[in-house]
Every structure is written in C-alpha cells, then in structure tokens.
Length: 365
Image 1 (tube, rainbow, N blue to C red):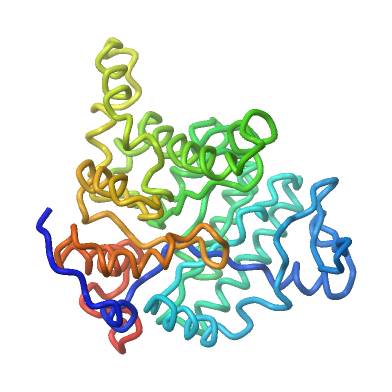
Image 2 (image 1 turned 90 degrees about the vertical axis):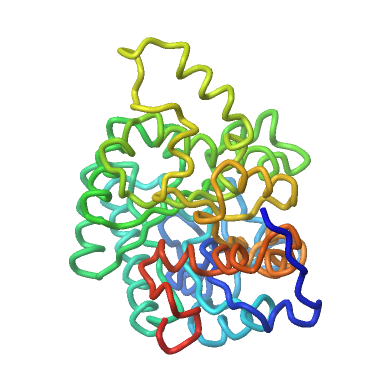
C-alpha cells in the first residue's frame, strides 16, 4: 500500500463523497402498527417501565427505541448523513431483528412483499440516492422463489439481503441454496448480514459482555462467506456479486486453516475447484470495512485488495466505526488517494450498477 497524507480534519466530510452499503431502516408497517397498538407479523407494541415505546416478539422485548417514522422523508435522512459523513447514497435493509423467519410460508411471503414494496417506492422516489435491499422468506424455498420473481419482475428490485443462517440452516442447505442459484441466474446482487436472532452461541456462552455482537456477528459473517465458497456456488456462478459485512469476519484472518483443510482432503471430496483463499479476491465478492481496527483492515486489504471494499456503518445503530467509517477511510494515512476513492464509492457503484464515473449526489449518478 502506498502511504498518502491524510486530509485536514475539517475536510473529512467535505471531501470525497461516499456510498454506504450497510444501513438499516424500520418498516412503516411496524411503526404504524405500534402507533395504533396492534400486532404486526407477531410483533406487538409494548411500553417499558420508563415509559418508552418498544416492540416484543414472544418473550423477547427489543432494547432499541423505535422512531415515530422512518424513510418518510428520504431526502432529510440523507441530508443528515451527508453532514455527518459525506454519505450521498445508501443501500438500506431492514433492521437485523426483523427478518421474521419465525413466520410460516404464507405469512413470511406477505411480510416480504410488503417490505419490498416499500423499498421499491423508496427507489422510485429517490432513484439517485437509494437502493433497497429486498428480502426473501428463506424459511420456505418455494415461497422465496415466488417472492424473488415478484421483486424482480413486478417491483424492479435488483438487490437483496440474506442472512448467513435461516432458523439454524446455513446457506448451502438444500432448501436455501437453490434460491441463491435463482438469484445468480436473475443477475441480482446479495448483501449478507447476520441476523440479530439465531447467531452462533446466542443466549449461551456468548450471551454476556456484548459477545453476541463482538464475537458472534463477525463469526456469522465468516460462516456465510465460507459456506458460499465451499458450496461450489461461485464455481457455477462466478459473476454472482455478493457483499459481506464486517470485512468478511474472522475467516479473512484464518485462511491458512481453511486452505490447509482443502489440501488435506482428496480431490473427490472437494466441494469447490480451488482453495478457499483464491475465491476471496475474485471480482464478485465484496466486503464492508466495518472492522473497527486499522490493523484488521490492513489484513483484509492484504488478502483481498482494495477493489472489493465498501463503506459500512450499521446506521442508525451504534456499531459504526468511532467517528464514522467514511470519515475513517478519508483520513486513513495508510491508503493512497485512489484507494480511498475506491472504498468510499467506486467499488460500491460497481456493485450496485451505478455510473462508475459519477460520485454519489451528482447528476450522473
């Protein structure tokens, strides 16, 4: 990597614009139901002891205080993000606790269609500044395939979000992998984001000290990444673009073990054509930079290069890099100007099919 001088502190926001590939929103259906005091796909509004409004699913009460509305004014939301971090474009996905895989096939499909319709309306209202990450009811293969077709052909959505596991089943499960293959054949993209529920070790050994986020979230990202690689999906569909949170998780830092295992087994037992490490820097796999640590990011760059890294902030939740991931990259003295620009927006523009020569927020974008 070529070192370059960092921009002056006052230039952090006013410099190169950014695309954020990892942001969340609260569905309007949930917020409306909360205001009206009614159930929404199993979620019910509750009032906590301190008077704050919240939602509960079964015995689980969310610790997050919901807003009154969200995405009702996308221009205002993005204006605030531009002021804070110079972000001019967002890819938005539902909050991580609302994948709703607890629903049966019919209700799950209805939920996803409602959610995807809201995202399609958002894209139509702000086509140059938002991409909606549509959702699929992956708890049922046939329902997921039908919702995929509806989202692509009826709503015009081209970008989706998946979780590394669905009710304890990894992405190579026989009921899930065909959905990923259908996505690849449709030419859409997939962001892979850990679910709030159903993470490895949740409620057990990782249930204290925020370990479910600090340990389990990057572990889940790694499981999703390595499951996709080991499934052979990328051999069959080398152009299927996928973006993984948390810099690909801990797998990036443990490649020697994965490659060692691949070389240990006989060719007849191998489920993919090449060692796992050779897939990581292929042009179709992307990773956000939400690793919170310069040395960790340097390792990711060493392993996959800068051409597949994007900004991820987890907005509006609290796991952004201190001071903001976009501002961090702008001031990173271990990156040259070209690398910063790639990470801030050019790579994400390529991933989402935007104009690679027009920064977000300009007329060409």
